[in-house]
Length: 314
Image (cartoon, rainbow, N blue to C red):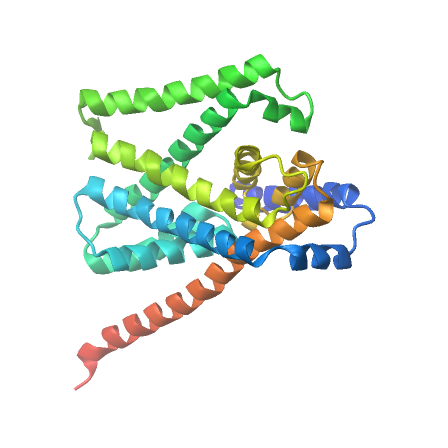
């Protein structure tokens, strides 16, 4: 049990160390002044577009919970869902261990709306699967329509194998949709019954899962300079690889992992410009939401504390 308890923290720490070491090798000769100049060179319009991309990403994240609750047949106000979802993801993206941290926040919030622990557990799992579904869809499209993107990271895969992998991912997504069209019977696992999503829910999952990633990648794309920029589609592909690697490694905020993958994947753009774009991403997608979420959690817990004390006052 102790080994299992410490395994992922050790893996995350080792990944951070290795990523930062490799990143420092890639960034030899880069100074903070260079990065500062790159940040200052980002046009005002691109700052605004990066901010709007952030809103798209977090609006889609609220859709994760909304779709899950739709599947569960629960009606909760959009405002409550949006605040709960925003807080959940803003904290889990920075803290890491998203299933655990996200589960705790959702339990505290949705239990006040009458959801049982089993329903909240299902909601967390459903949202995680929605993310996987959106990632599979976008990675599939990227590899099918631009299989050469893998060559940016060395000879990882032959181009034919890259396109075949993308096609396989899209086939899996298509099979999931077909299951909704066919209306497959519920799966009974002991006391639990898993009902296959309706077509409306399935298509909504793909839409919100993809929209969140499209918005997040847009933050980096708009913060990058025009010179050497390979275009949004390539930036999206690199983002999907870096974001997936960061999640698999359990590194909070993808520290070091995002930077390393992007610096390797964008050799035609000066390293200072790439790092500056990723700082904008961390500011808009991670830090500002994180600070805002802390305030929301404090206010929520304060209101819960007073509501729990109220019956005893007389």
